[in-house]
Length: 96
Image (cartoon, rainbow, N blue to C red):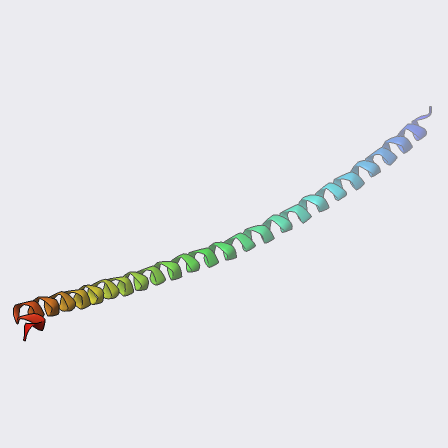
C-alpha cells in the first residue's frame, strides 16, 4: 500500500469519526433540551402541588371551624332540652 492510499484511508476514517462525533453531539444536545423541558414541567407541577396543599390546609381550617360550630350548637340544643325537661319536672309536670 502506498503512502497516498494510506493517507486516503486515514482521511476516510477521520471523516467517519467526524460524522459520528457530530451525531453524538446532536444526540447530547437533544437530550439536554429534553432534560430541560422535564425540569420545567417538574417545577410547574411542584408549584401546582404546593398551591393544592395550601388550598387543602385552608379548607381543613374552615371545616374545623364548621365542626366546632356544629358541636357547640348541638351542645346548646341538648342542654336546652335537658333544662326544659328538668323545669317541666320541677313544676310538677303533667300533675296540674
